[in-house]
Length: 491
Image 1 (tube, rainbow, N blue to C red):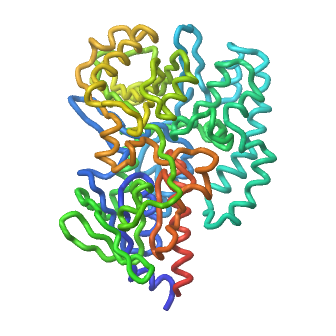
Image 2 (cartoon, one colour):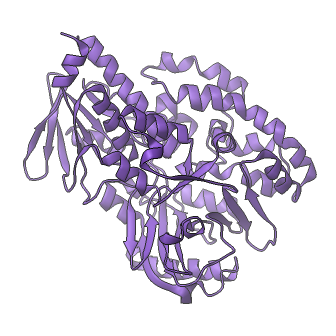
Image 3 (cartoon, rainbow, N blue to C red):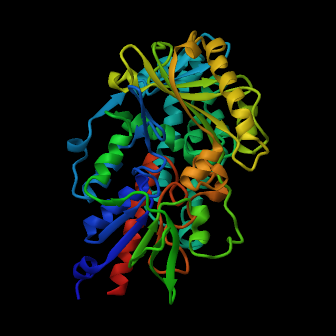
């Protein structure tokens, strides 16, 4: 029996249709598996969903596309051409950083010369240090994020070989400390270390390997897909069998291997391979097992406002970071669950800058994300959400000059930590899966191949290599590779 003929007869079930789940489904379908994707929500996408209302459109999940070649590979593995399916537009600058009480902003360009000029407005010495900083990041990106991110770490021994080079490159020291070795101005340090927040990591605690997120943005740029990130979801889901409103209650096993899944309502679907794109912190629940002795720590959550405004706010770029006073204390409060912060730092996505159809004529569709503690913190969200919304919008008006924002709102939606828990099954209402600390990265994350159950795998932000669009897409490649390996072994 050939491997290809075995695969033609094999069935794979993917639990969850986030970007990682769709990417692994495309790869498995390309390998010859009969693939069914099960999604508990009414539409595919998982956290990468779309919200539309009264002429306004928002990506309710990830909004910045980087490493487009990873997308190209994922599409190609499923027999698709990315650029025939979606239209990508390069953004330069990628985003703007503004600080409370300061006139100067920093526009983060992917062009090194333009970026150097921006840095020089804060510190000439730091501008001259940019090349050395990027030279220090290059091997971390190549040996750490790129090489290590595209292979599995099934054992401590397999991971041990990576450690000496990461120690030599100082990639295991805290990210902000690594950045501070090159730059001295506090604003420049913040501008080159905040990126780990995009995947739920405190830049003062995550390892400097996540500094590669800066390098890849300069190397490959930042991109926008017409229609938003959800256009990627639509294109990836189109050739797949995606069953929505299908909640998986149990993963069935027998004799040490996966047998299929049971849906809410009692339907059983048999499978030779099951890939879970659900929260990895719930895998034991789907298997009917006790929680593992070593429990991974989830990330902070997020408070999100989706505002449809009848005026445009030219102070904002397509992506803007509004950094409040007491930035370090803010991060400490939200990542360590100390309660709601007293100041606000937010990310604002304004896609109508690039695609006017995302808002009504002359208006803005603003997605405002503020990191907040997850549900482990003692926060009564039904009681505090309205007040937090008003305080946040007022801060954007008075501190950052978005005059008339509140009065301009014609349509409004919101998400809070309980929504992450109820809609996505996110443990503690986490927004970015597993916190990317040193002891929860690579081998120390939930493994791509679930131990003890043949044919069961993870994909998505909680497994290796991590969260973010490039992370979950590379992880889909790792998982699909392990499935192919196991098929060879069975033959």
